[in-house]
Length: 208
Length: 413
Image 1 (cartoon, rainbow over the protein chains, first blue to last red):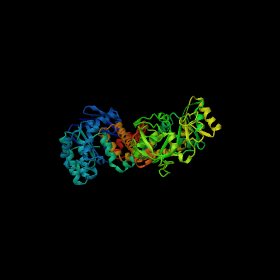
Image 2 (spheres, rainbow over the protein chains, first blue to last red; image 1 turned 60 degrees about the horizontal axis):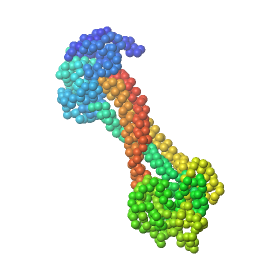
Image 3 (cartoon, helix red, strand yellow; image 1 turned 90 degrees about the horizontal axis):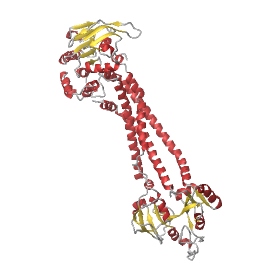
């Protein structure tokens, strides 16, 4: 359950963005729609604790994260959130498997190789485990990024334009996987996008 | 997955850069190690060899040559002094004891020294086999000589005049090996010891007609077998130990001004020699530090640039729960592991170079240079490289610490 109350954010020398109050049930899936510059990313980063709350409150599973310190946010993020971005942001120096294992390591959770297998299987890229990131196609890389986001079984998956960089075929594939993998892992899914192609997959909309 | 896998993967992802940085630092450190070991062993050797010798008295000439010849046995004699004059000096009230040295012959480039048992006691030699020399033409050989020339007890050999193999051979007077010494790690290892009389006997032919006066009244203090008044007898030098500190002031002045001999202090001349060599050593050390500085700069640049490329990595790692301090630590360890690898490789390289030097250069075998002696200064080198790594990665790691995850991940940074 994610609730926000009177959340606003102001960038230096810009007008403040006021967000409407949100109530998002656990396990539900939402699309965050809006023009670019409307604050989609800002809201997503606020929800995920990547950006410190200026005013208002954000409650995630009954915990008010708006008052958290930076270190507390780091810890909370690792345990409860999975992030997917427009670019996959995988670590090129590591293999697919190492990239995935980084998630539990950094979150301070036990590293489970079976879980890595399981997630890769869910995403249909089990055969890519030992490959380096440079050897993957764009679509494969984005799927690895999704695998990394769901590996720790986070309660919330926040995706920021996850399909914008992909062609139609890959977009379809990735968005379908994203939705099904979130369901399989009982995670709340919030996708910020202006990509019309995935609108028909998710019916809950938040218009900014 | 852990911090070290992560750092190792990063280093491995740019192998040439990593290798270059490690090698660059290793070269600098190796150079310092070589100089350090060389310097330390030389100084230790000089102190060892000059221990117990306050003053060397010999024929007039270069004082440095006198010391190099009669203490370190690497230069040629300055000439001879009359035994009668040396005797007079040996009886001087400021002299505690005096050891005569008669040089002039060698075997296979190893010097034969005519002296007394007091010389052996000076270096605290111990016998490995056999005994010390007792009568003429008996020798006791140093450990290195015995090993490299392969001399055994009872072996006989004839000496060559001068200090090289191609000198005129004294075949008519063979020496016999009576004893072999244990290694002392001093100059004695490279010497063949005998009595003064043997040296005279070998050279007797050039002094035909001068018979030993057996009916002498007073025997020489230094060489009791001959008379102190025998004016034909000569020795090369006298090693003197002072009776008291006043001797250090009075004796050299007395010898240099009142006799036609000269006196030189081993410690003073050795210090002078070191200050001459020191210029070269300092220049090399300076060059080594320049290398280290350049490698530090190179490591800094490598980290700084890779940190720029890695800003997304850093941000994504933060989003996965990594704390700022963990990323700071990771960057620090990356820098430190480079410098530590470099310095460990450098120290190993330095000792290997010295080892190769000792097996390839024959002079170094007799010098007793030990390539695998480690010094506490090498620990300082490791500690220093640790600090160097931390300094190099200071700015990059602060950058990593300050990564603004929101801006980077939103694509604004």
